[in-house]
Amino acid sequence: MSPKFEDTILKHFSGIEDPRIDRTKQHLLKDIIAIAILAVLSGADSWVAIETYAQAKKEWLQEFLALPNGIPSHDTIARVFAKLDPQAFEQCFQRWVESMTYAVGAQVIPIDGKTIRQSFDRDGFQKAIHVVSAQVL
Image (tube, rainbow, N blue to C red; front, side, top):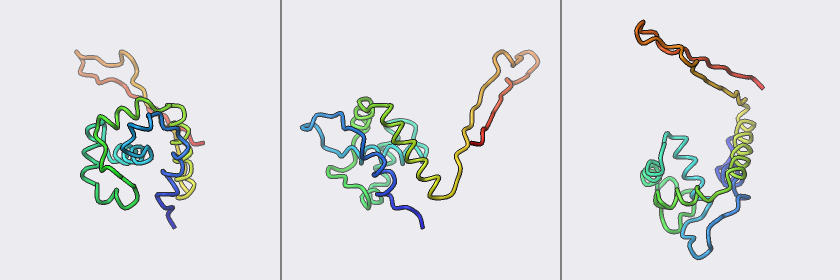
């Protein structure tokens, strides 16, 4: 049985402190965070792409998010993330990933990649050498 969305992202990020002033809150912090995470997991790589994703998935998102004032703009999303405590966000994100990997019986394998400096040769048409390492925990 897969865990419910409310028990995953929303629960793990509920402890994050909202840095915004009360009078300026038109969108719930948990909605903004959930939209951003889902969009990035789907390939969004900018604030505009996150908003575009949310607009395209609005009906689906409304099934589990409140969205009291609709989809937040890309400017709103960017402002909120600029003010969030990065360490608190990282801790919440790590706890969420750990809970999901536990729920599906998966294992997280850290992967690191590097390009060896000056390993290319333009004259000899030799591309740079890349090294990838993975560590099973």
